[in-house]
Amino acid sequence: MREHPATLIKLKRDGHELSGDQIRDIVDGVVDGSLGDAQLGAFLMAVCCRGMSVQETGTLTTAMRDSGDVLDLDAIPGTKVDKHSTGGVGDKVSLFLAPLVAAAGVPVPMISGRGLGHTGGTIDKLHSIPGFRTDLSQDEFLEVLAECGFVMAGATGSIAPADKRMYATRDISGTVESVPLITASILSKKLAEGIDGLVLDVKCGRAAFMQSRENAEALTESLVSTGRAAGKNITALLTDMDTPLGYAVGNALEVAEIADCLHGRGPKDLVDLTLALAAEMLVLAGKASSTDEAMPILRQLVEDGSALACCRKNVERQGGDSAFLDDASALGQAPVVAPFTPSLGAVKWIEDIDPMEVGLAAMDLGAGRRAATDEIDPLVGVVLHKKVGDTLEGDEPLFTVHARDDTAAERAVERVAKAITFSQSEIGPRELILARYA
Ligand code: URA
Image (spheres, rainbow, N blue to C red):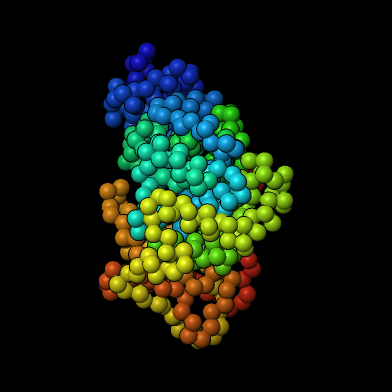
C-alpha cells in the first residue's frame, strides 16, 4: 500500500473523496490480506456513514471486479445479457426467465448466489433438482452456455474475491445497508461474467433490502449509473416486494412453480414480472425494438413449448433429473404437509400478506439459512393459496406448510396465519412494477 491504511480510513471517516489509486490500494489490501480485519471493518463503516461519490463507487466496483477473473465470452456469438434481482421472498424469476430468454436467441450467462436470511437464493433452488450441478469449471460454464443458450452456476472463488471478504465483514459489522457498498458488491460480480448488458430488478418493500421507495430509488440510480459508466447496457425495474412473489416459498416448492410457468400456468404476478424483465433483455440484445414488440415473442415461446424444451436441455446438461418438469412429485415431498383453513364466518378479501413473516417462517422450517453455514432442507416451505385482493370463502385452505415434523409445522402455521390479514370490503390490485429506468 502506498499510504498507511489508517490514513485512508481517516480520510473517508472525515468525509473526503478518495482517489482512484487510494481505492485500488484498499481493494488490493483486501485481497492480499495487508488490510487487517479491524481496518477493513473501520473502512466499511466510514463508507457506510459518509457515502461515496459516483466516481468513487465506479472505481470501487471495477477494482473489485478486477480482483479476480473476468470471463471472456467472445467465443459465444450474440449479445450476452443477464438479470440480477436484489432478492425477496418467493423470487424465483431467474429459473423461468433464463430458459425463456435463451429460447429467444439471447445467451444468458448466469452466476447466482445462495440465500441468506429470509430471502432465497437461486443456487439453493437449483440444488433441489436431483443431480443438478452448479459447481461448473470455467470451461464447462462456456460449454453449457454454447450448447443450451444459458447456464446457471455458483460463483467460483476466482470471481470478485475482494467481495467475498468484504461481504463477510459487512455481514458481521453492521455495514450491509450502504448504497455504494451494495452497488460495488452486486456489479463487481455481474461485470466479471463478461456480459454486454444487464437488467436489474431492484426490490422495494418490507422483504427487500431497501424497504423505502426513496432508498430503493437511490440504489437503482447508483446501480444504473455505475454499470453504464463501466460500459454496460443497463436497464432497471423497481418492483414491489411488499407481498411474496407467486405462491410458493421454499426451494423445491418454488422449482415446482417454475415448471407450472414453463407449461403456461404460472401465477400471474410471477409471469408478468418475468415477462417484463425478459422483454427488457430482448431489447438490450437487439432482438426487439421495444418491450411491446418483445412481449408476443416471449408469450409464443412459452405457448409453443420452446422455453420448456430449453430448460429441459439445460437441466439434463447440468446433471439434473428433468422429470420434475412433467411431474413435480419427482422433487420429493416433506414428511408433514399441513394445510391451514381459517374460520372466517363470511367471505373475506385478503388485505395483506407480510412477505417478511412468510420468509422468516420458511427460513425457520429449514428453507433458508440464519447463518452462512446452515444446511438447507430443499423440501420444506410454505405454499400460499391466495394472493392479496383474492376472496376466501367456506372451507377453502389459505396456505399449506411443508415441514420436517409436526412441531415445526405448528410453529410455521401460527406465524404465517398471523402474517395474513382480511378485509370486509374489496381490495384493489397491487402495483407490481413501480418504475422503469431505461
Ligand atoms: N447482494 C450482493 O451481492 N451484495 C450486496 O451487498 C447486497 C446484495
